[in-house]
Image (tube, rainbow, N blue to C red; front, side, top):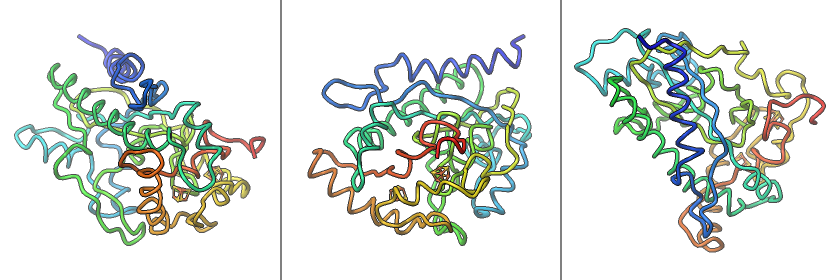
Amino acid sequence: MEKDHERAAWVQGLIKGFICDSPENTLKDSSDERAFDEPIVGFSNGADPLYEEFKDHVGPFCWTPSEIFSKTFPGTKVEPRDLTVISWILPQTGATKGDNRAQSLYPAERWARARIFGEEVNVKLRRFLVEALSAKGHETVAPLLSPEWEVRRSERFVFSSTWSERHAAHASGLGTFGLCDGLITPKGKAMRAGSAVSRIKIPPTERPYRDHHAYCLFFTKGICGKCIKRCPVGAITEKGHDKVKCLGHLKPVTEDFVKSNYGFDGYGCGLCQTGVPCESKIPTKEDV
Ligand code: SF4
Ligand code: SF4
């Protein structure tokens, strides 16, 4: 019988193989440059109490793993502990980060491509993983591909959604939140995240933190705040991230810019994710 660690290695291999070896990992530019570097993968159990805590913290509309699993597979009886959340981080490439670091108002072309075509890669990875696991008898759903996934109003966060990739990554040991709301991972904050919920037994990844802000220097040491200065519209302050201001810059401002300067329908910013100490690593005070 397959052992837990063999299943974990198999799933990690599927995700890493898709990103590292597949032609699907592309920015869709003239040279089909790759969109993302090698991913990191984490796991959390479906019965992890953090998923219930997200309901209190973000909103009661947040799905637990078993809620989205049961919506998708109403005929399959499972206990929450029988489910595993598989989470992955797709790090932006050095070229994309370097280009965006040099920007002060609009996104670099590579960044805008990673936002649109890179997310298409992420969608394909979700589908690929669902198919590969299902083919081996593990019913699997990628919550963001569910027709029931939606953005909701949140009293505390203005708007949020029924499933957050960053929260799943946090529960799966992959990172903690920064002042700007981004998730700081061992590969930094300049990344995109994805996840799937599967009826498969895999041991959870250790969470090397207790506090959800443990990797952000502003919360732990009262220093840094570099993301505040990077934001061109003042959407980040010592009080946190103003989503309404941020969204107002993304659309229509960067949307218009991307269309007229890069020639495709897109948008993006990510200035607070680049040119900051947490861009590519868990920062230390020496990085400030
Ligand atoms: S730039 Fe500094 S303050 Fe902002 S999220 Fe990163 S570590 Fe925290
Ligand atoms: S994404 Fe851009 S507009 Fe939004 S908070 Fe970050 S720097 Fe500011």
